[in-house]
Length: 317
Image (cartoon, rainbow, N blue to C red; front, side, top):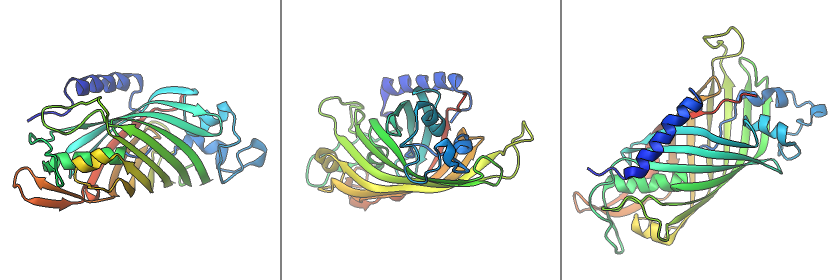
């Protein structure tokens, strides 16, 4: 059984282990679930502080306030989010990391992302033709790559709406909607005999609306009598997605390069840093020749459930 990422995966796993020592117990698609660190600035919508706007709440903020809003430790922050999400259709985990975040003028956040499919893609090569020959796991991993934006991706996150009621207190609630755009390429592929390809890599693009509703717990964290232990959240994303023609052909999407893709996500965030999620996506179906049965197969791997654990770095200032 071939592990698809070879030495590149080993190097990436090493970077995750190192980062866990840098961000001890610090927190797939989601760019950023809002944390209650932003609540003192926004929960009361005090006009005198400049945080009284519901729509485009970051458009008028300076650098320091933007860092507080996004929970960032500076205008440039390395390794702000690390996570792994297992998907049933791909029989593998997507190991993801926000390599860096940049706080930008105009109130948005730029993010550099890497996503690696850590699992076997099977030994049967993709057969060129009208209908490709694929293993079921390779088909599922190709779907996850579209959903997450590629092996290497860049994203921009612009908050367009926020409202919070006592968001920094036990029992508080909040809602936020962001416009998120991603552009990525695939260095990793799922064809037998190779795990990486840097020659004319396929590309992905997505522009989506992403939103979350959050409710804080009433019980305090175990180490203090103030605050609260966690936050339940429900949300997701929906919007336009493009993938290159070669990728669509090779992995059973045919001529469907322009699609509407979305994802529904629910979970719990513990003390603003660790996040446990369950999610299910929706998007185009694939048609391929199954490499085991050699029967033509049509499936929608987007609909398979995923389970993920993510750590995002805590704000320290």
